Image (cartoon, rainbow, N blue to C red):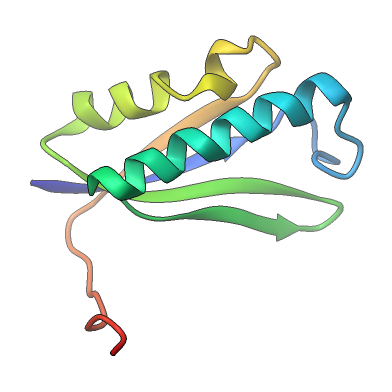
Length: 102
């Protein structure tokens, strides 16, 4: 198995603060998709990162290889929405995980 950092880049630097109704509906489907990936065990951590006047999304995933990471990104409804979002996919040669909380 391999680890990858996925960075979801929004269509503009001020997103999500100026998100349209259509964009926010697509984001709801995006969140539901990543919840399913977490439950399935592919996504280790997923969430927004606020930076400056906007934000980007991030996920750390554990998958077989780069094509599998690409398939996760391609399967995200936010990409299929055609609203201008895109992923950067970066390999992580190793990770350190804390033990599960008790």
